[in-house]
Image (cartoon, rainbow, N blue to C red):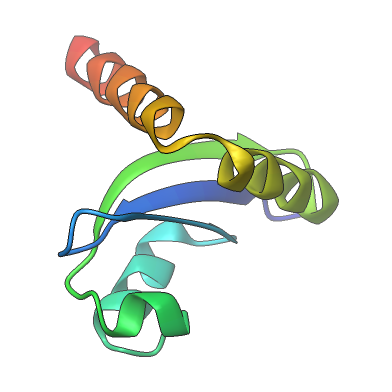
Length: 89
């Protein structure tokens, strides 16, 4: 069974968009091609700034909703922590 991921992209206007996908790279490409979510179509290009694995589709949806409910400053902390983690690898 393919894994599901929760991801955050930073839009050209600086806003953050949260979504789920089985293939995050492909989904980001769709966003940048104007075939992604309506929100990102007018805010291209987008850049992947966060991703995490979820055990299944339901878990990914629940985590996506939890992240969407976070205050913007908490989302920025989440993204910064992820970026720090990538740099230390």
